[in-house]
Length: 429
Image 1 (spheres, helix red, strand yellow):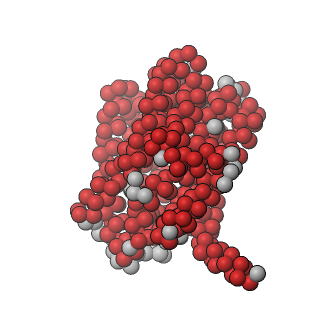
Image 2: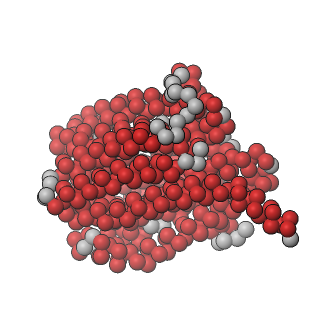
Image 3: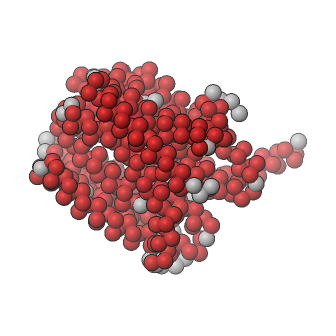
C-alpha cells in the first residue's frame, strides 16, 4: 500500500508543474472568454451585422497573415529549449528576428493585395489593424516562459494589456466611434501586449543575452516549414468560408456568421492550452519507452475526446438561447450556424492531441498533408454547399473538413492513431 501511494505521489510531483502551468493558461483563456463575450458581443451589437461583417473580413485576413508571420515554429522552439536550455538565448533571438522580418513582409503584402482587390477603404482598415503582425514577434518571450513552465508571467502580462484594450473598446462604443477605431485597436492591443511581455521578461531572463544566428535560422526553417504550410492550410480551411460568404452572400451574412462563430471557436483554447502544457510531459515519456509513451497518448486522447464532446453537446443544445440572449434578434439566424459549427470542436480536440505525437515523431510533413486534406475538402464543400444552403452550408463544410483532416486521413496513413481516436470517441481504453 505504501509503495502504491509513493508511486502516486511521485507522479503527482512530476506533473505538478504541468498542472499549475495549464491552470494559469486556462485562467488566462477563461478571463479572455468572459471579456470577449461581454465586450466582443457588445461590439457586434453596436456595429450591426453589415458593418461588423466588414470588421470580421479584415480580422480574417489579419489572422491568416498572423499565422504566416509566426513561421510555424512554436512547438519546435519549446522542444529545443527543453532539450538544451543553455542554447535558449540563441534559439529565441533567432526566432525573434525571423518573426519581425516576416511580420513586416506580411503587412506589406496584405495591404497591397487588399487595396488592389477590395479598394482603398478596406486597405486603410487593414493597415490600421495590421500593426499586430509586427508587434506579435515579441510573443517569442512567451516561448521562453512556456519552456520553463512559467506561463503565469505571460498570463499576468497579457491579461493586463487585454483588460486595458477592452476598456478602450467600451469607451469607443459609448462614444459612438466609427469602424476604423475598432480596427486600430487590434494594433494597440498587440503593442500593449508586447510592452507587458517585455516587462515580465526582465524578472525572468535567459542566462545570456539573446542573439540571432544564421545557421540556427536555416535549421529552424528546414524543420518548421511543414508546420508553417500546415498552419496556413488550417487557417485557410477555418477562414475560407468567411471569405466566400462575403463574396457570395454579402457583408451582412458574413457579420451574422462571424458573430455566431465566436461562440464556437472560443472553445479552441482548451485543447491548445492543454497541449502546450502536456508537450514537455509527452517528450519525457517518449524518452522512457514506447510502451509508456503510447499509454500516455491513449490517456490524452480520452481526455481530449471528453472535452470535445462536452463542448459540442452543451453549445449545440443551447445555441438558440445563446444567440438570442447575447446578440439579439438581428443575429438570430446564427443559431443554426452555431449548432452545426460547434461540432468542429470535437475533431479539433482529437487533431490537437495528435499533434503531440507528430512533434515527438518528427513527422512535420505528416501535419502538412493532413492540413492540405482538410483544406481541399473545405474548399470543395464550400464551393458546392454555400450556393445551395447559404451560411449553413459553410458550417457543414467546416465540420466535414475537420473530420477529414483530424481522423479520416489517419485511417490510411496512421491507422494506430486512428484507432486511438475512434476508441476515445466511444470512451474506450
